Length: 194
Image (cartoon, rainbow, N blue to C red):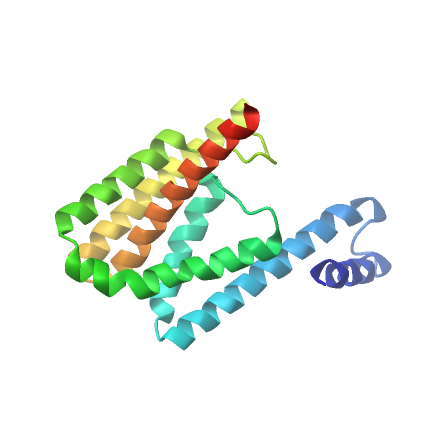
């Protein structure tokens, strides 16, 4: 359905000579991805409003999307699988905040966070089976991942010091999940190569 809709948009753009015919396939791909991203953002926004935690969901998405784009890791094979996993992941910051922050000692939370950051720095970027990276791309993605991670750690420290615990937790969970997906992606690539 998304592909058909994107194709219709692309045909209109070609007819209006906004897009050249030789670039049609590239634009179709971009339009499809744009629709998927917009749908994910809309669904995430609705989820945040329904759960009464739109700020927490927004902070989680800002941390997650900015770092995940460059760090790599395990990916779903289908768009619908990606959408469903993305929606399921939103349950983690929203529904685990109170049990974790009230019952887990700060030292344990700190230890897990430091471990996640170390994993991200050491493994970044984790290639996908579908998209291997050349040496130059690897260096670029690693550098960007390290910069984003450093910035996010600084923001987490500020959120913690300002006692904005729910927003701190949203960013923290994002970093931990990215580290988990990176380890899963590394394992998947090693199994595929063997």
